[in-house]
Image (tube, rainbow, N blue to C red; front, side, top):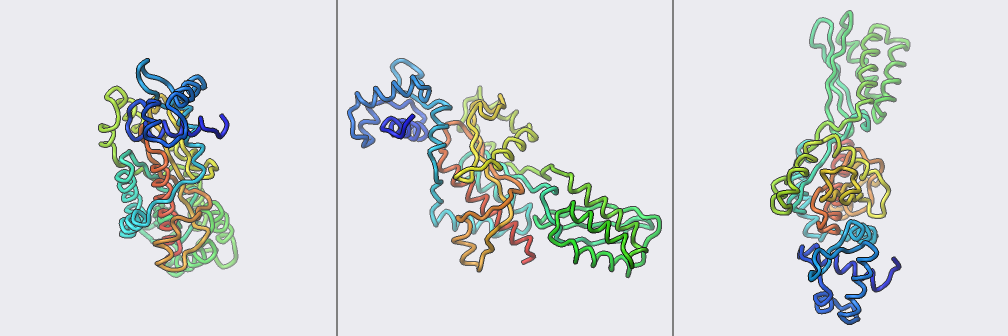
Length: 365
């Protein structure tokens, strides 16, 4: 379809149907929209759009509603996502800035996104495989066991038991911890594993070689953990207000299948997009339970542009492109007639605030 009046008619139908959830007729468009043509011309355009698969007429005497193809065309033409208003941005920042931990921030983000969109919100915590090492503490807990407390740049805290045949002295343990923190800070866990193994084999670390090898094994194991630690979900009660009873059961089934949702939303968040937001509409998800639903997802990650001060962080940074490699995702699930523009803007805004939260947590500030 060319960028023509017909496209404007399609956009008008989609926007009106999203707002009213009632079939849209040519007379209503002619009256409410300044399209510059008669009702008869609009009716002809709508008929052509139906022939091309962008619209469908539920009943002979009814207006028309968008198809998946129509929604897809509409979403793809949202070349830019309109930023949230300054008041909305301040509200998001005020709510999320009270977070005391990564888990708290993710839980708050899910609740907030659900309230903004009136849909189901899902936020994933970062997997260890995408984290970098921030700090490690080695604590003797038994005659032959050390506890490694590992803190990553994303705020994740993981604990691993390290078995040794003979417990090193406290001074040797502290010396190993200091060397690991000095040499491995900012490294991926797989790189840290190699560094620690080499460190343990070096001169001066003979007494902690076994502990170093065990710690290297723990880092290597963590680096292979590609699972999100947890999914935080909010807003399932909103489904009852937006879906027919026949659609509710399969959609709840889809929400139970967290592995499927994680894969879908993670893939969407990693796909390059002009808006920085991925959208799957109906059957595009290849998930039968989501046939009547759309999924909007965006990745959050590490900031590539450090913020200078609190004012810049609160008002400017979250609406700038600031994400490098996504380390996890935030998304929304709702009906195919969702308000795509508003949902995409909200998902992107929350993702960018999480990016800065993770970045600042990782910096140790």
